[in-house]
Length: 556
Image 1 (tube, one colour):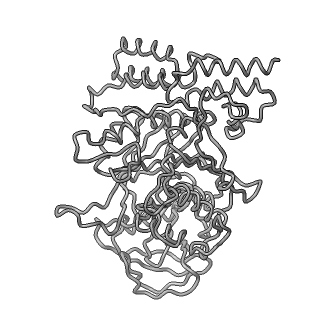
Image 2 (spheres, one colour):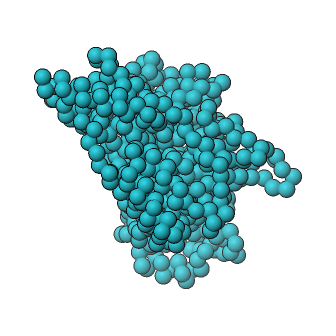
Image 3 (spheres, rainbow, N blue to C red):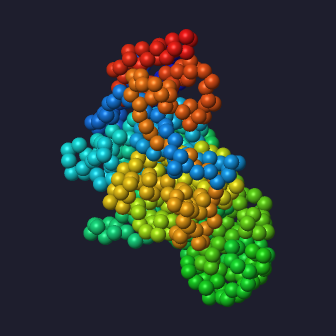
């Protein structure tokens, strides 16, 4: 087997080790010892475990009892599922869905995508009823959250290696676990790479489960791979605009000139008296997406009339998106003459609160209703709205970004990528990973019953059985694009049966590799890239023996 004592994985680990020394989290003498152990580790998994010893809890007081992954002697690899994969056009983008344990999926993705993922979004399970087979947690026991943190830790270590140097990761989490999971992110990604904790308004109808408060928010942690000076965009697909309203200000009247304010309203006449948070004070006419009459609005605005007049002279954009007349503004770019062109590419995001009013980001209720239109019934609890994930992805100024979600659930991240591409003409690709866990509403497993079928329906307009009788298709155009579905399979590392060896069953084309013409090349490639997908390497001698036997056979 080719040896490389300083593989890319270990180079990353050593770089992170040095960063801990620079941050004065780790003593240089301890780091020197860990560096030697990492360089001499037999496997990448062992090197990662050694690097974990460099984590200190002295500074934060953070501690949890680590639960180890199950150990086996099998190699985990990707096997294509032709029944679930589909192609709408040979020239279309191809996205990916991996069905299986996301730890193993991440290990396999490292073979092809190390350092290439631009955005990661994850929505890990929060509590004991949604943790899965290997990570049950009980809020009442003495080891609270240990399993959640133990499950997340190795996955975050692998995810960090997948991120590009300018990559960003978002993690949705509830208020019970937010502090603990943030500490874990600080340890894995480094405190200096922390960006922000966004607060998302998750519901408009909170449950009255407490006589002290009603929970309406969840959190979205944000970290970058390495600290940088790149700015986050505003919501590109909504024009990067911001609300002119400010609920804390006094009510006032603003006057707007004719032929300046862009609107999404249908052409025609609108009567005074329309009220919401803003009151329209006179009749208006809309022609070709422009309000062609002078008009006045009454409301709680962040600007005075004099400020508004100055902004208009400097070509500030003003837009009204609905009959609520909640006017919005944007200072960047040339004034447009039609709503279809009202897009600003570069707006710095400063608002850490995410809600329907300011960012047009929906709640869980809207997400559930949308999922029901896709399936005609409720099949998944508490899905995230695709507008939330679209909003987060659009922070990144890259319309060809690679997006990863390794807790894919119902497939919302894939839906968000498709919708965002449609709105701004982007060519982003998504990779989703989902364990096929069986529940009461998904007897065949979440991936089989929800994730894959959702993508099939919204991308092709048809179900896997060829029917097209779900409500969503009546009001929406299918997105198109192709989906490659693979599943995590396993092969014994010392399998010697002809046609069933690791070198026979692993398909290199699923890893972006051209087909090998010589078996010797295939053997070397498999040996180089797949040892780390084993949980236990006690049978390395058998692996080496099999490799030597096949190597000898190719020379004979």
